[in-house]
Image (cartoon, rainbow, N blue to C red; front, side, top):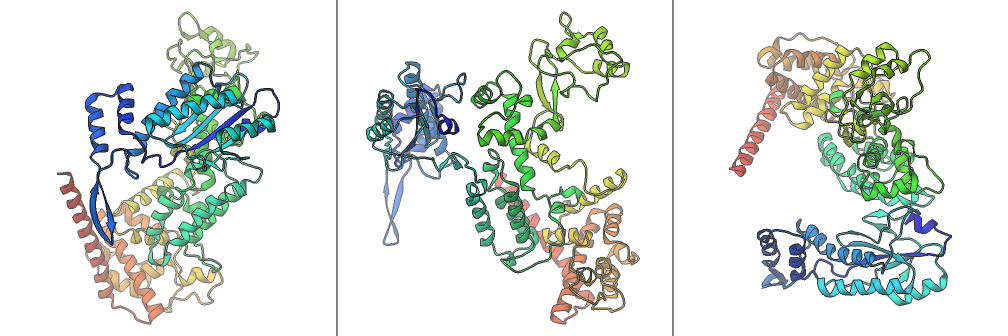
Amino acid sequence: MHCLRTRRKGKISHVALKLDMSKAYDRVEWAFLERVMERMGFASRWIHLLMTCVQTTSYSVLLNGEPTGYIKPTRGIRQGDPLSPYLFLLCAEGLSALLCRAEREQQIHGVSMCRNGPKISHLLFADDSLLFCQATQAECNRLMEVLAQYERASGQMVNKEKTALFFSKNTPESVRCAIQQLWGVQGTANFEKYLGLPAMVGKSKQHTFNNLKERIAQRLQGWKERLLSKAGRAILIKTIAQAIPTYTMSCFKLPKTWCADINSLISNYWWGQRREENKIHWINWGRLCSLKEDGGVGFRDIHSFNMALLAKQGWRLMSQPCSLFAKCFQAKYFPGVSFLKAKLGSNPSYIWRSILAARELLRKGLRWQIGNGQQAHVWEDEWGQTTLHQCSNPMEVQWVADLIDAESGSWDVSILRKVFDEDSVQRVQQVVLTDCRRRDYPIWKHDPQGIFSVKSAYRVAVGADLHCEAVGSSDKTRNQRMWKHLWKLKIPNKVKFHIWRASLNALPTRFYLCRRRILQDPCCPICNSASETTTHALWACPYAVSVWALSPGRLQKLPSSEVDFFLLARQFFQDMECETRELWAVICWAIWYARNKFIHESLLLPPQQTLDMATRLLRDYQIVKSGQHLISAGMHC
């Protein structure tokens, strides 16, 4: 679409037809579907099973609120059935075959992105169809004949009210009017969307993607955060709010300000902030986006995730050079060179700009597996295990192929010594050469199998290898072990999040409220003898000490202290067995609950009642979880 919009010169003009099928699923002829599957080579048994699923459908209707009768359809596939989109794709293969035949016979000519690019006559996905041909009456007539033939065979019918034409810029006005009259449909200056994405992106990126932001905001506003714990909000944020823009982000680079706005919306929802009211964000967004093993919650930073998704497209360009996607982009933007050396070019599409923006992220994790050595550059590409150094007066080489003995298919040691110092020569010889008859191919060094994944690319994008905590490696390991133990505990999620916040000193205790200039007095409201820090509130306060003294086992014998709560928790997770950790965590939560009840209701629960509440919560949770396990086990029997 970008090429059609920017094609202002040339005698040959093109037209794009965005089809809309009327009642597409309801009109599928069963005989046509069965015949297509036969021609595609499906086994007769498989065809029989599928057609049985399709043909045994029956419907009933509500008449005066009562289900009445059973209607036996004779065509159509069910809306909402997970099988239906795939069956409709099979039907679309019939249209694709007709269009390909017309193209082979040169009755229609597709559009190419550039002079030497592949010609595209149609793009089909389920009932979303884009057809391309030259803007002449002869080709449009032939295209109409193909569609009429498809309609007769499949039962489909073009909805001309929703079908639109888009012409290349060099199409004369008289030709446009004639073709519009021939088709009986209106022309458009811009297809609004195709497959849910904007067909073209204008100068105002904020305006283009504004509806996406509104969708996310509406979903967040529709959830009653007062009825959900932090754990419940985290699930909704991860599975819905941060998933909504994923499809768009895999194709387009979203503006940084847009990403920051979405991060802010999600952060406000997480901390319970609505409209103009202000809520304290006890932990910054960067920390929330850290991995759980690094003390975060595992939220996605929108911009970094956007770059990781776009890097996936760059990886596809490199690893799947025979795909239509790669052929089109290579012909248009980087003919004769690799993607890593491609330039932006003149008047590029926004998709190409977006993919190039993620190329630097791709470079950080890319390594070449050497085959014939003709694709990997000796000095510019990463192909060895470590950085290589030249010898004095090095021989000039450009490609890794120059370092390989063509006859034996092994490293040419004499040339290696003319290029590298002795230490680098030894390292090069350790690089395993694969079949010298095949091309070099990229591998992803952050995956043991060398396969690119968005997950590992995202970790590179956010710098997950450089953890937020500036501590020694041994402390990092101990901290990570503590966080892993916490998130694996078999306790309610709200308790896990409570311990997580407490470990980061993110509970609204008086000491930290004073630091933020919200309160003046940091003293504990129960004992009035010390500042109400996290450790004091949950561990060292006389009330907390009374609760811990009643607790069973080793917990009642542990000394109280005013050390940082994170260090206290880390020591517990290191020394205690799993069952004791779980009990310790729920008692911490119960003590905090009792403190809040005293502050807001002036009611201080007896220590034994607080302990009973904690043990009952843990017991009830474990009973429910064991019951779920039994139910799921019964379902699999």
